[in-house]
Amino acid sequence: MTETAPDTRRRILRVSMELFAVHGFHETSLREIAERVGVSKPAVLYHFPGKADILDALVEPMLRDLAAALARAAAAGAPDGPAAASGRSDRARWAAIEGVLDVWLEHRRLLRLNLQDTAPAAPGPACARLREAVLRANFLVAGPHPGFAERVRASQAVAMLSDPVVLFADAPVPALREAVLDGVRRLLDGPHPDGAGPARPAPGGRRGRPAAMSPAMIEAARRMHAAGSGATAIAAALGVSRATVYRHLPQEEESE
Image: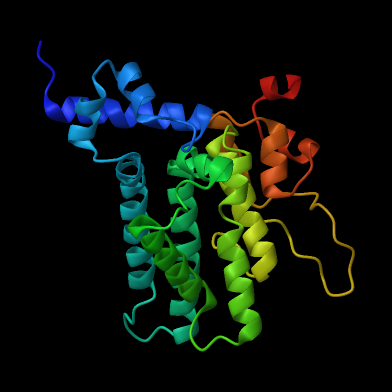
């Protein structure tokens, strides 16, 4: 069966991502990519004029997903009746945070490549679009009429969405997602959207792990367990002890 041009293009992208992940963008040559794909270097250049064009094609789906996530977040904060402006702002804030995090989780291999040799952050159109998206996320998280402190915390919240995804890219996604969102909530000192977050200490009280789980926390724990997370990861994500988690999981989980 004769391979079509789109098939060859997809193979070039897949092989390039694999080589970039192992050797880095700058240390991978077009000749190596061509040899691994099984075509000539001119054949690679037919589809991509240069190595930077390969990188742009790899980054494009992530940028497209990021733009869509931020558009949904902005729509979540749009006036839709008598709701207070603060409520709309909070919906937009958390829609942006969760949307950006989900994009990073989906494209975590590409983010890891950026950590290795900062290739996706190289100057160019893709870099400019990524910078604009991050600034848009900061704006949505900061809310309307933010002061300097609010703008700083918003930038911190957006920044802390990516590094854990890169550093713990091999962790179960549900547990990683919950843990990252918990960290953002603690920074912004906001309530968990569904009440499943760790309990906040009373003023002057001692910070610690809650001894009981709310119904929403129990449901979240069981979802994470069904997705493959162990009690240790679930406990870390929900801010409770493993013993507390064990009480709400199937008995075989206690062998962990």
